Length: 384
Image (tube, rainbow, N blue to C red):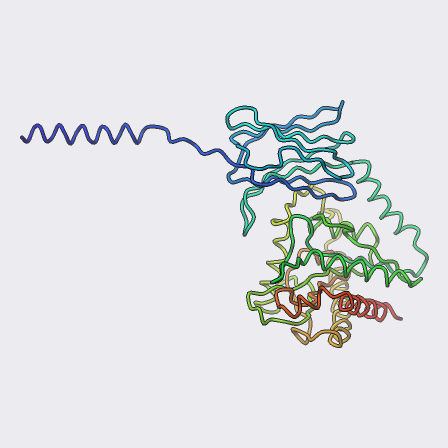
């Protein structure tokens, strides 16, 4: 009996071992959605995926197309062929090439430069494959236009750049009724620029003019190309506490944050690059290695003092429109405020996660009041 039992046990373990050594089937990633964002100089295509994937790319000039062969992928999206209204694309096609292979074809109106990268899951975002198609000619034209504005501005004219936060893949904070921060800040930004440009002494510009994402460092670069005298990044606040309300103004801190709340907010705003999908070119924002560090420190100290001065003016004015979250400006390490030569502030207009504030933020008259207040504060700041 003992020998028979031993044989049975041995065979059982052998069966388990053979089973364990069998390769388990690898589940193919699934494409769950395809989205597109149009900017003046590029188009971004985003594929949502359930798993990371591998890919190979190629392009052709006649007709102009960009191809991606996706490996370990199955299709579960109805968007197999999309006609698109876009400055650079006419159509997006997805074709199955057999088991676990899919071909993505981007039908272009002209040859474009392509950058492809993947993003890992973050917060509510899944694995993503991102393709940026860049019109190099238009990109250079946009840059030259900004630099031209700096060169031709009349003597004594001040340049203001308004930066509507978030955009594209990054919606920012979302209200109870699904109002998106990225939409509200763009509307208010457009109003501010319109009001400021009615003054001969001030010229105002936006970092983004539509629903597309710009990396935080690129926003600073845009401001510098304009020769900016003042940079204002517009946002709406968000909180897990639905009762939280009020406006607030933030400046840069090169050391620690004013308080834990300011640090948390800076960390949240700085994740915009992760949510929006930033693929920065090496020279997107780098300190000039030949720039004297003492000179850089002097510039930074002066721009920070000017930032504080504007923040105090704005807080005094904005409390007549909306209650303040804090009576004075707060400081933290915000990436978007890091231009050493430009006075910069970040404005949280109201809490979009509060039902009453969300209602106000959607109202045109409230947006107009905020825009007029910002305009008034900017004029005061530049007043001799």
